[in-house]
Image (cartoon, helix red, strand yellow):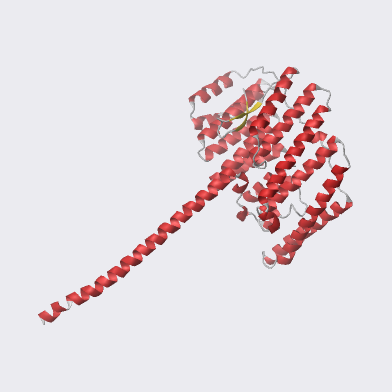
Length: 441
């Protein structure tokens, strides 16, 4: 009996050994699959991050945009009001898309919205989108001439605070220095006003723990009795640009598109987003038809040899439409609307770059009609700041930033020669964090 018992051990061992091999093989297979999945995740994550870094337009998480809300703009709601509405409601992606692709929104509003968006994205853990929207706010605050200097300083201080929320110390310090520079170099501020601007930077300085910056800020707080000189920019582009009057075919096309958008929104609300294909196709057809009619309208109006102000107004209006098309091309309304534009996104961006060139030519021609050398140089500087801003926002592909900077420096030198040196000159800085246009001391 004992012999029989021990004689069965080798057979049981062989059976157990086979099962161990099967289990080991299964474990190794699962391990390989897990490693492969992990590698794929990191590769995709790196690709997305890289794409957002090289193309800031791709930082918008369009999959989080609620179409029912975003489509209100195509239905006729003003872009600025809708941008604030979605921002207040915490619809960060929708507000981001609206603000970025609506160049008609006032610069001060754009800067404020992007700054708040940066904070929202930071709270959501989306550091890439936070970084890009805060950079947008900084760029607009510096390059838009319509923002009052005290507001510039306050806005840049808020941008610095936003960068600290995502642990971007160097970029926060860069924005804080810009805020301090604006407060120090802006003429005609009362000492109390200047001191308030410096005081707004104290919380930032405490978190930065940069001794030179903290010491300089402390000195300015003790002695805000500064008397800087220099001229402040006077915005002229939008004043000189005449708003175009649409002809009846274009007015009708806009009405049809707005109606189609409203019907799609109503259908989505009724069905919860299901069974919307007929309404979606109707809106797509309306958009394509409007695009065709707009092309004819712009061509006919330009062929009629309008005045320079009317020409600039037409070009800016067409630029705003082109920006809207790019937004649609990357599903910036939270839904696929025009697949033809989605496939041609890069070509649409190149159209915008060409349009920026046409606007540049018109601004240059307009400046030559001004008799005041200061006004002439101011407009030339504003034109280059506008081009630089489109580049920083990612709307100007392959932008010649050094050529823009050279022409901006030339215009600023002309202002100095005319006896109106800028209090806050602007230049492109390679060593800034990140590289871009900055106020110069």
